[in-house]
Length: 477
Image (tube, rainbow, N blue to C red):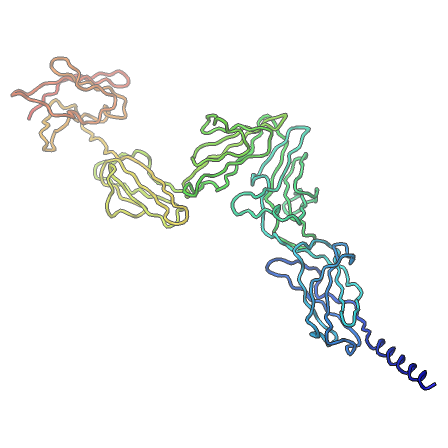
């Protein structure tokens, strides 16, 4: 009888320990309404209560589990595990991070303990997304327009990899995409989901990475799609921009989707250039004919490769009257520009500013160098001529002796260059020594051999309206 009593007492003690080893974990409270994680932020808090705290063993760990996107815990993901014995006081707050594949509107979390084993009820559902790509991206090769033939459609695609620093979301297999059509300046409607969109209605379309109710910067450029007509035009994009920096290498020209293509440069067909893209390192007027199936569209671009833009405020030819000067000024958006001025192909020392005061006739050139970023140059040429003196009469005597007086035959302005007047000079033997419609007041241009006599020449001046002047020219030393 005594032994039976001992067994009953031991069984009671064992049952009492089993009851004391149980713990209850309450439903976790969310410290957030939605979880929109990214590389710059991915920490979320939950708070929960448990009882009794004395039931926890020294080896206990609290585990936070994340459901799938539908809220199911059939295959949960552990997103946090505490150290053994680290959490002993109720209520407790734990922090966790989202896996990079998280994307959905109905996630839940729950809390489990390991010693003793217990599981909370599920939390409220919440939207959760890890924004692995959160920058703007390009569609349609960054071309703003597109066209389709009547009864057909145009396929908009997300570029991969795209141009320049484009971070294509197609590089992340877990992402999905939504397409929208603009209905106003700030409004749009959902059209479809997917990596591409077949458009058969005119309008302006764009794509966004599907981050649900989370806001993000992962959206595309806008593309305006129209139904093609007989004179439909679209555009061409340059991978390095326009102007582009030629020192960085060739740029890739790209046009809209079509069935076949033919590229042209400056109006001339480029042999074998029949792809959607054309790579070049030459400036020029490029165009492409795009076969859309049942119709044809064209596109063009004036491609520049200076890397910067600049202009000069003088004409290509300038005439200066006696005593006049001219200030030529260059305007440019070049980074850290340097300027070199030339007169008759000789560098003008000390002239390094963006303007130069012209004091004499000649052929001028200025070179603009961009010295930072895209190393490139641009140049302008212009000529300066002195206005012809306005003499009253046609002289019949010259003395080409180099003293600066009557060295050349100078005639009235109404007969010189720019008036389309024909000037003919003949020797006493009837040989033509000069015949021009652009007389520069510069005869004789070569030395005359006197041989002890003063030679006589004869001139015939015929104006544009056929008025004629005739006479002689005596050349003296």
